[in-house]
Length: 156
Image (cartoon, rainbow, N blue to C red; front, side, top):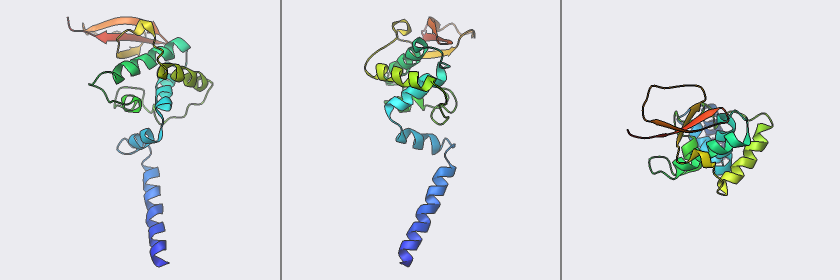
């Protein structure tokens, strides 16, 4: 009985520790990623990065995720790509999705996982907020959609 109580106490302490680290990148995001399906990770990227503006914008973001997935320089899972540090919106895997955009994101994630791609994205693996400009000469823009500009990095 005493051994069981000790085990229960340790399990409870571990549970509290894991829960309290939920926002921590050391354990929180990896823990969250391991609990999510590929669809949920993809829909979260599409939801937060496209500003829930349009199916076209979500499809474009989803295409970038899949373009990265096919490149060995990036993680080899959708959740790995979406959860990669400093690549997608802060909190993309942890913030709540609170409006009807989540329904559209789920529908678009299903389409992307079934093979749909935005043809305008081409091979782009990068995007940023539309209207911003950077002084780099290796950014080849291919599309503006969903409040973002999509580009390929090319050497000149």
